[in-house]
Picture 1 (cartoon, rainbow, N blue to C red):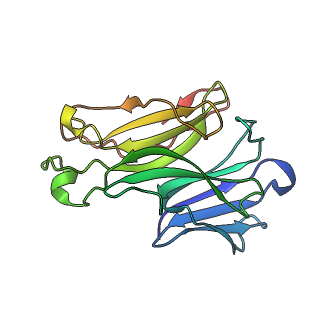
Picture 2 (picture 1 turned 180 degrees about the vertical axis):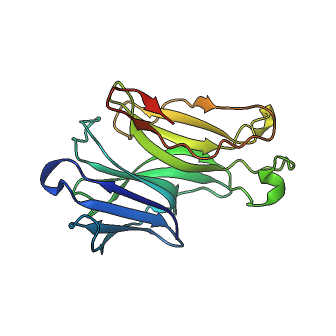
Length: 203
């Protein structure tokens, strides 16, 4: 198991419930706790996703989805064309009990996990995308941040970027670079974004 994630639901009848997940071989498991994490039960599975997950409860209406809708994103399963990988979003309208595929955030190519590629020493055909993270911008729009290796030709071994959805995750806009160092070597890692009580954002 890897990339453990947990969120507290903050809205509606399920306020205070914890949802947790993690990546592993197979579909994405969703565990649920109604006693502040003392005990957990396997609540559901997200068959559309397999790894590097993120869970997010919409804090306000986004597109057709009301506040309290739960989104899950991660590496997609079963929808990729040959030689591609993609980051997908699934949506739950019942606090994580059932899930449906919503959209593909971005598409890339699978990447070999080897030292030469990670160090920027190999210029192979790999162009993977990794580790999505969902949040809301200051205009109330859904944002997906990701780690991106599709622009190695311009010296970005890995960079952090984001895309914005105008319709609650059904479609996604153009890529915006956030942390991009064109030295052929730097790997900023994985974006986690939070907003403080005064409206300032931190990555």
